[in-house]
Length: 203
Image (cartoon, rainbow, N blue to C red; front, top):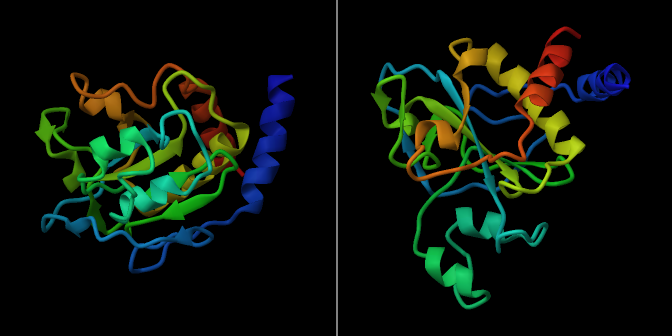
């Protein structure tokens, strides 16, 4: 049964042929430009992919609040939780919503503000050398098949374009900031994601 699912997913994923422009934008993604980025340090290779989750308010989906948050236009009065976070200036490179729709906020060659205080294999400031992908969701609620399919296809494209990103350098936010963060959480099926990625790359 799992093999059948993977074969179907492989066929569907390969229908989405992504490319990345010279200025770092993903084809097929909706562009919602965020002002929350800066230049990467010179001569630093993009070598890490960090997976996150986000929902605003927590556990609510498809309301457009993530886009507002990453563009500094979140209404702090619309929900009590928003008052706690509306002052923050953060972003990610990509958001994959529950339907598998992809939004890009920051071009990959720029430094998005997604990791915060972080370290991977002894190297601090993961924002300097990473790409951040947000999955619309929570730590405890299962992610959708559409999200896994989109993530697998995007990951394959990123690994081809930025060869320093290897299997061992795809991590969760919790891996690089374990004292602060828990995402993408126990709901994220790492093995399923890896299997999908391998199927996509072998197409």
